[in-house]
Length: 207
Image (cartoon, rainbow, N blue to C red; front, top):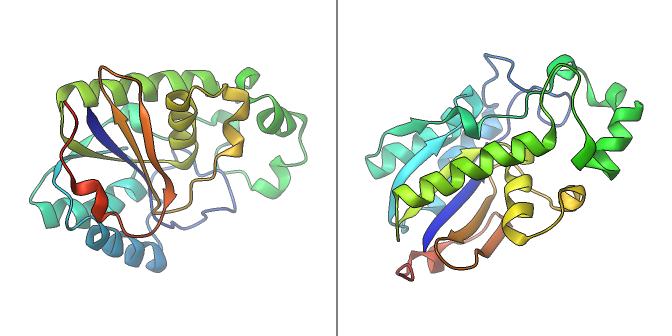
């Protein structure tokens, strides 16, 4: 089994205030930069074989201290990128929360498509395909995937066998780590939304 560490990017400018989506030039805040450095320390004892990241700046900046500490290059993956929110990109959450589509996203997300953008099912499918591809490329290794909150929640729902309509029940905070063992057997979720010590994940992968 390969162990995938699904890491949400650290705090960025606008986190929790608007749907940043694929807007370019959104960087980590000062607090986020400190979170990224602390993350590298939390993973210091782990045998990280590779680091993959969404191509957006806030993810790359989160991955950079860890990759540098391990002597690894960051492998950019568009399929780990943020949800394409289409016309909702850049709009404040306070306004979006009053729309009919917002209620659908919260209660029946499997049916939701963002205007001019992706459906959540499409995001789940591309992210799952990429996570499984990465696991296949790194058998019995520990690999880091730095991506976005909704992407991770959709991945966790898939690996847990939870219907997409229930993915909103999963919480994934900035700079948190969720760990999933993926391979020829049933997937195993070892961590969700973890911000503490990860040293026990350093053990050998089950073949």
